[in-house]
Image (tube, helix red, strand yellow):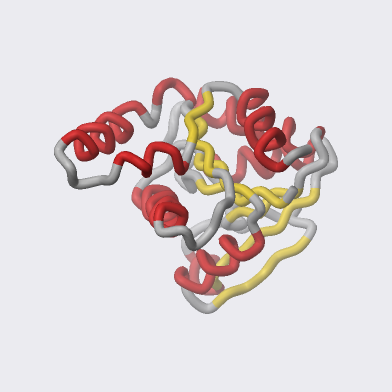
Length: 181
């Protein structure tokens, strides 16, 4: 299965996030999945890629050319796809994915999550989406989404468009069940 992973590029995050996401990458490789990601060597993207590489996994990086000035690119990618824009990058990552994992991140990660969630809620894809909830990172956002559902701003069906997992093992058990693997 090709799994697109969205997550932080910042190295300023607590080490526990890096450790758990590196374990997630290693588990993804051990289970024979391919990771599609933003191509970065830093932050949680880099952690996932290091975990994948340590276990010999296939890694596809998708990165706009201009971003190379701002963040280092992971040198262990099996394949590196250059795009011109961030929008083109997101489109390519979405098209390559059989499933999505969203690890902790900032505004770019939020943007990526809400785009694929919106597309799923509108019936544009049926691909499974998992929030990897390391140290309860996603709890505040989930509270806002739940509150907005209660107030009628978000349809209640949106809650069925993604799942939340606390461990790497539970992430892949869910995805493999959904994929019939």
